[in-house]
Length: 126
Figure 1 (cartoon, rainbow, N blue to C red):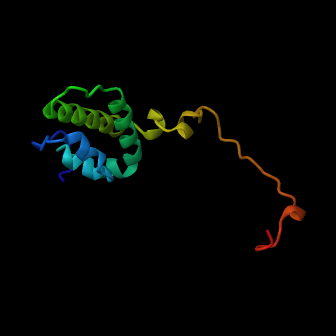
Figure 2 (cartoon, helix red, strand yellow):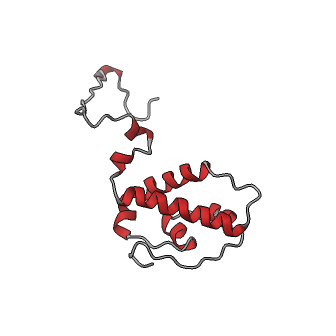
Figure 3 (cartoon, rainbow, N blue to C red):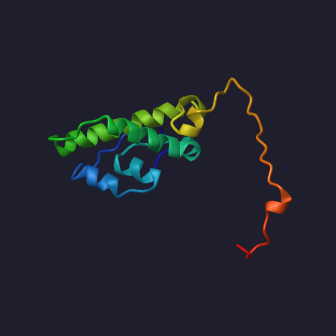
C-alpha cells in the first residue's frame, strides 16, 4: 500500500459491509476500501482510528442502500477518522474513556495502595 495520502483506488463494492465485518487488521480496512495511508500515522494511532471509524459508522443508516453507496460511506468514514489522527494526537481527540477522563491541564497524581505484609499469603495456599 502506498504511503501517499489522498490517493484512492477503485474498490470491489459487492457486499461491502459483510466483508468489512470479517476484517481484523487496520491495514485490511484501508486495503479493502482502497484508501492510501502513511504507515507511521497508522502505527501510532491504529486503535484510535478504528474506534473513531466505528463511532462514525454507528451514526450512519445503511438500510435500503446499494452496495456502491454503502462502500462510499464506509470509505468516507475511514478517511475522516484517519484524517482526525493524521492532523492531531490521540490525546487531543480522546476517543477512549481513559483519555476522556484524563485532564491534560492537571498533573497526574501518583496513587499509592498500601497492602499490609501480613495480608499476603504464600503462593499456592489460597
